[in-house]
Amino acid sequence: MSSKTDDTDQRTGPRHVAIIMDGNGRWAQGQGKPRLFGHHAGVKRVKEIVRASPDHGVKYLTVFAFSTENWKRTQAEVSGLMKLFRRYIASEARDLLAEGVRVRFIGDRLQLDAKLRRVMDEIELLTSGNDRVHLTVALNYGGRDELGRATKRLAREVAEGRLSPDAVDETTLARFLDTCFLPDPDLVIRTSGEARISNFLLWQSAYAEYEFVNTLWPDFDATEFARVLAGYGKRERRFGAVPA
Ligand code: FPP
Image: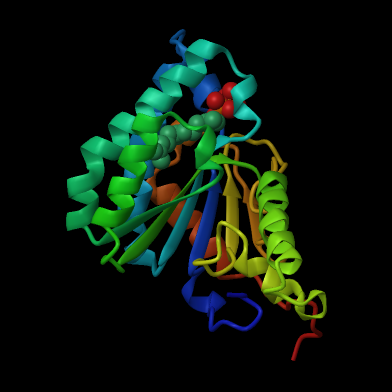
């Protein structure tokens, strides 16, 4: 799907919000605590923002939980994060189901631990009938990695004669992306004062609005979320066209 053709109404807020949840480590270190303490605090905010989303008409929420580059962190932090993901997914499944949340993942799962992959598969299946809010968790996700994997699959279709090279255009390529089930993000928020996109939704964010906020992710609450969404409503999105 493309937001160039969808019915997003910016006056009533973004339909798809994507978030780079940055600053957990600094938040913890600022309190003299280990970095993982910040990631645990970050999970609480994920829950809060998921719950607040339908109140603002946000139907799709995509969060960047672990990038293809995050493997470069210490082994202790990586394994702590993986354990946190598994525990969070398993322990929240029933509540997410009851709250109408449909959970899906993007990223390369093949490198993830089998036990984590199992809870991911289970929650996707369990919540597959939900439609109130769509939570997509980017886990072992990188935009370039996604484009590489998509291109490989597309090339295979061509090599095996199922797709003509002449039929390949941007719509075709989008069908091979991890996000093929999602509309493009209308708004990308990054917390912690860093103004970069860190390989997140590179293709999909071509026409997204960006909001960089100074707040560290564990302090980003529903009130600040509402403030950022209100700011989005004042922007004029033109998608390359001249204003009417
Ligand atoms: C970036 O902060 C944050 C992460 C790499 C992890 C984010 C993960 C969560 C909030 C848990 C979400 C879990 C689920 C299942 C949705 P940082 O560590 O880079 O912080 P720093 O820039 O201050 O070092």
